[in-house]
Length: 242
Image (cartoon, rainbow, N blue to C red; front, top):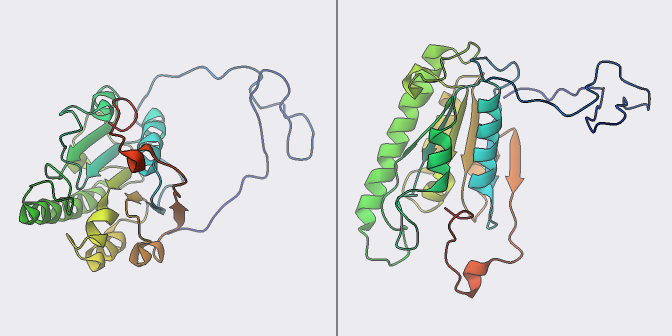
């Protein structure tokens, strides 16, 4: 975990004026639309924070993957490991995010979930959910050790496997798995402590506050639900939920 730093100059690229925080013109700021640049391997200068995204609202995974996309766009190596998301009767085998990640340089994913959802009485084997979560926990340890061996302060080939090291690791739904007892919350704390200092670690999931993780995090976001179509019997929709 690192201390916060702040840039004293605020700039805006809107095709018109670009001013500093005190209202003066910033001559170095772009004066028009920012053009996309080729993605080449790079190393982040200010990674190393632990992020926790939790709550009953929609958007935790979406936000984490959005950050992953942004980091990959800068040439940083990103990997997503999903717990508990192994498919369900209302979700197709191929998720939209998997297709998009596969088409994006420097971003990879894997899934340790089991079909169905733990505790939902959908006929799936609860022991199998626990076994897959435990496997995801062990896989996370491997990825963290690989990141430490690979040095998160240096660039990584965009097509390199995650075992070569990553800069941003997203552990999606790991907090659900811990809150539901599929893995021990103490193991989540151990993962945070195991992570190399320059690795950005993002943990998502959990309707109940995961205090074991929030107490260790640098950035905590509570995603609150005000209304959700699931509460009225709605099902997951292609393109928004999967």
